[in-house]
Amino acid sequence: MTFTRISLFSLFFSSFFFLSSTLSSHLYPASATTSEKDGKTRSLYSEILRDEAVARLNNLGKVSDADGYLERTFMSPASVRAGFLIREWMEDAGLRTWVDSMGNLHGRVEGMNASAQALLIGSHLDTVVDAGMFDGSLGIISAISALKVLKSIGKLGELKRPVEVIAFSDEEGVRFQSTFLGSAAVAGILPVTALKISDKSGVTVQDALKGNSVEITEDSLLGLKYDPASIWGYFELHIEQGPVLEWVGFPLAVVKGIAGQTRMKVTVRGSQGHAGTVPMSMCRDPMAAAAELIVLLESLCKHPRDFLSSGGNCNEQTLESLSTSLVCTVGEISTWPSASNVIPGQVTFTVDLRAIDDVGREAVVYEVSNQMYKICDRRSVSCIIERKHDANAVICDQELSSRLKSAAYSAVNKMVGQIHEEVPVLMSGAGHDAMAISHLTKVGMLFVRCRGGISHSPEEHVLEDDVWAAGLAVQAFLESHM
Image 1 (tube, one colour):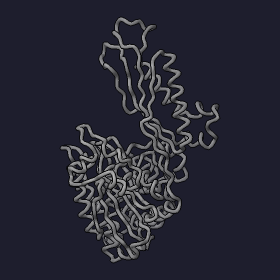
Image 2: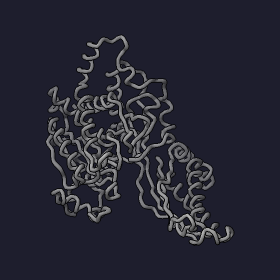
Image 3: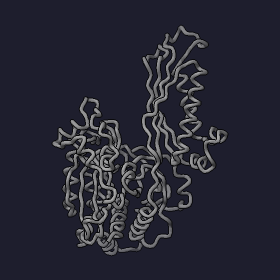
Image 4: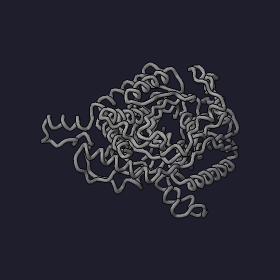
C-alpha cells in the first residue's frame, strides 16, 4: 500500500547482506551454451512462469479507468474488465471460478480431498491513482501461473488439499477511503455499516456493487465470512515496495510480520488576522505551531529513546524495536483560508505512524499527543488530535514462513545453481490483505524485489527473471502440499 522505509528493516537483514549483482546477471554460468540455457528454461517452465506471466501483467497494466496512467478502483469499469481477464486466466489454469457479493474473484481447485482444509492464496486487483502494474497483480498472476504449471504436467489433481486463489476487489481504499473491503469481508471483520460508505460522487459501496449486477445485503455480507475450521492458511506474494532486496541482491524474501499502524488528524486553531498588522508578539499563528508539532514528531520518531526512556512505559525490548522499526509521516497539510496575506485561522495535518511493537506504538501515540498539547498551550493555540485508524501488527505464522522460506530457496537454487546465502527475512511497513485475513487464519508472505524500492508509481518495476523466481517459489510451495 505505502512505501516502506529502510530503517524498518535494518535489524532484520544485516545478517543477510552480501556482495552480489542482481540475480539476472548470473542466472547461468558464462560458459553455458545457448542450448543448455534453453533446456534449463524449459525445464523450469519459463514460458508460463515468466513469459506468459509478464505478458499478463502488461495486459492488466493497460486496463485502466484513466487515459495516460493506471487507475482501477473498487467496482469501476476497469476493475470489472480486469476481473474478466483474471477469471479467464484462472479457468485456463483449471480452476472453478465465481464472484462473491463483495466483488472478490475466486478460483478454486479441490485437489485429492475436497473436504480438507483449504489453502488460500490472494492479493488485490485494485490500484492507487497513477499506479504501477505489479502492486497486487503480481501475487494473483504468480499463483495462477504456478497452478497452470501443475495442470500442464498433470499434477493439479494431486494437491492434498483444496487451493483457492482470491483476487480481492479492494485493498487500497482509494474510492471509499476504507481499506481491505474485499479481504475484510472474507475474514468476517467488515462491519455492515461499510455498505453505506459513500464515494465523492455520493455512490455507496452497496450502490457500486448493484451497478455491476452484484446484489448484497447485510445478511449476505455476514455470510461471506469463511469458516475458520475450513481454512488451513493464507499465503500472499507481493512486491516489497522497499529497497532492501535490491540492496542485498536477492530476488525473494520471507516476511516476518506487518507493522501496526495509527493514523491521526491534527487540527490547530489560532487567531486569523491581517499579515501586516498583527505584531509578532501578539500573533497566535497555527501554521507556526503546526510546524513545531511536525518537527517534534520527526524528532520523537528518529530518537524514541530520548522521549520514552524515562517514563517507564516501555521496556528495553520495546525501545529496541522502536529504534529500528518506528516510522512517522505527515502526508497531508492544509490551511484556512490559505491566502498569502492572511495569518491562518486553522491548520490541519495528518500523521501516519507505524511500528512492529503495538505496545511501543501506543506509547509513542501517547507521548507525541502529550507533547503536542504542551506546545499548543505554550503558543496559545488550540489543538485537537483525532485517531482515524488503528491496525495492530501481524506476526506471520512460523510454520507457514518456514515452508515459504524453503520454497523461495528452492526457486532461486533451481535458477542459479547451488546458493549459500540465506533467504532474507524482512518486516513489512506497508499494509496488505494478509492483515485482514489474519483474523481468519494463519498467514504467511513472500516479498519480491522491485527496482529502487519504488511502488505506487508508474516507475514500479520487477525484473522478468524475478517474476519467474516468484512463480517458481509459488509452485514449490504448492508442491509441498502434494
